[in-house]
Amino acid sequence: MSTTQLHPATETQVATDVLARLEAAWNAGDGQAFGTLYADDATFVTIRGDHLRGRAAIAGGHAAILGSIYAGSTNRMEVLDARRVADDVIVMTSRNTLDAPHGPLAGVHAAMSTSVLVHTGDAWQITVTHNTLEATR
Image 1: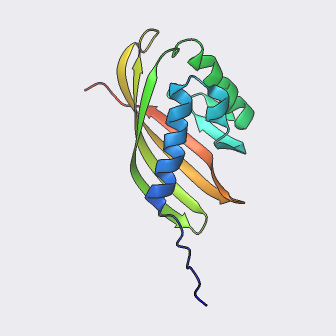
Image 2: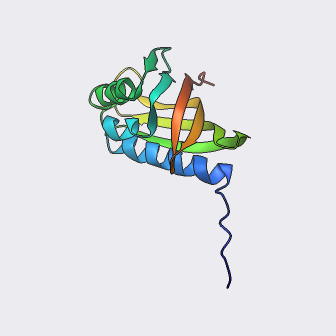
């Protein structure tokens, strides 16, 4: 009788999957879907330094900006680094390139984000994100 050994997903695979779902939610203009990737008690520091606490606040905040200043925008998200710091914890760094057609950030801008992903149950959830707008070069 043979058994199949299951190999855990690599840090980069996990981070890429989570980031792809965030990108899809943003590009669909769906703040609620964006928020579903966050843990109930997650925190999010925005590019303006606002500190959102909890999945509902993160989802609501993103729904608000995706329906107003970032309506019609696209965001390309790329994993730059993913490192397992404990069995069920990955720290991910990404570059997010926003193309906004109007509003205070009209044009193309990049941000760097650091997120902590935690494996709970059968899914990876984001527990912390800190997002920083890159300086114009």
